[in-house]
Image 1 (cartoon, helix red, strand yellow):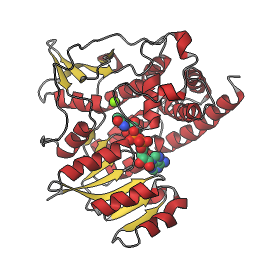
Image 2: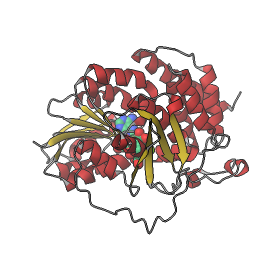
Image 3: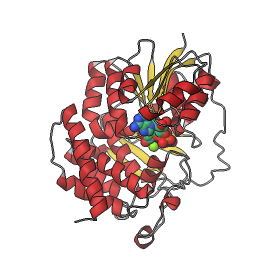
Image 4: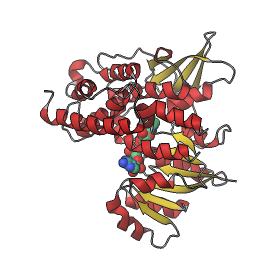
Length: 385
Ligand code: NAD
Ligand code: MG
């Protein structure tokens, strides 16, 4: 039986690579549903190639165009966020790959878990916003959450059944501004920030990588995926991105997972787990990577990392606040409405302005997200008053 896969965000960086993986293994995987936000042409092209049962375009204004583009295909076409949340519950689906970006991933992930689908989790924002709720539901409904983020996949691949983790060590490339001074950081542009040294990814995560918010989010993601405390999570800057992350055990032994930077591997591993399958492409050539280096992260220059740790310590809805404020400032930075360093200022301010809730319900997360977006947008427009 081929595994039936739904891809949320099939037109993005992770989504298109997931389709490459599926394309390499038509004997193992079948596409059940494809969804995207806006890109009608690409979504229709993917549907013609992979023949899903269903496609969903989140932006309802694009429904007519998509319907027309797929007029000759035997595929159901739906539109809107609600349709997206319903489609993940479809009975035949085995795995839901959450490859959409941001807070919008939360609701469909909750629905997929409740419907008993295995989650291949790329959308880390879901665990940042509501890690406690999500992991609680996953336990209740006995649904596995398998990491797609390369660091978490690496850790997952290093875990041992009978031995608890002493520490997880997340590697970070350091991004394009790793060696920049504070003064240089004041004037960096979005064009510079969008050039990641090792990975080609969507715009939002590329900015998050440049600001190190991505690593901060990955610390929070690690807490929920592996049940470790903040003190058990260490970040080390490793510019070559060859070691994807590590686990230290009680006896001091450290296991690492290595490979070329290629997201298809963690995507495929989430699909094939517990098996490994063949994957085409470049292999690690140690002659080419003859120097591996490591540095401590600098939380003075990259304040977002401290803000994320702070949110993790406070818990409750604080990581949700940081995520929403970050989504607002990253969108503003991409429109040249805020400076690179100004992004951390707004996030920090939002953390003090939005009401703190220690044990949020789902409704509290929705309200926190909306309130934070309002406050952060105001801070962006009016400056930091
Ligand atoms: P991307 O911008 O390239 O693609 C995002 C996809 O989500 C697109 O298909 C888009 O249509 C869809 N989408 C966006 N907003 C939506 C909305 N409101 N409703 C429905 N669909 C929506 O992003 P990406 O780089 O592929 O990243 C996707 C997720 O995976 C993010 O959470 C990111 O943090 C995570 N991730 C990405 C990488 C990577 O290498 N790109 C690595 C690790 C984790
Ligand atoms: Mg990562």
